[in-house]
Image 1 (spheres, rainbow, N blue to C red):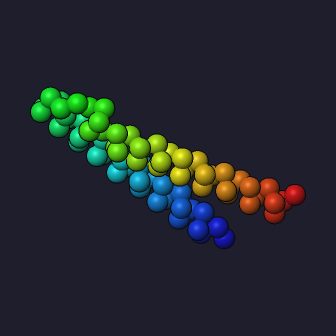
Image 2: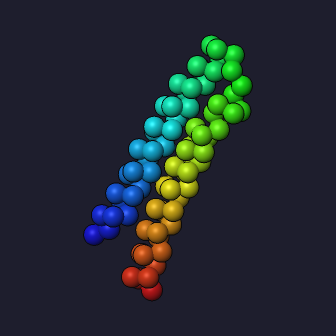
Amino acid sequence: MYNYVWLSAGLGVLSLILAIFFLVKDLSFCEQTQQKKLTYLLANWGMFLLAIIWIGLSISLYVLIQNQLVG
């Protein structure tokens, strides 16, 4: 019934998995090459944070729709 909500949550989870994968990969690269972690990993942390927010908003949207239908 709420396929778009679950699709959005699924894409958020996929983004979270990819963010964790790239974060770990780039973190090990930074340790091997002794690069500054803050500037190199800033985009990775941003993607990680956006994925968590995306999942939270999907869950919030689902709860709000349920409350409107019930109440």
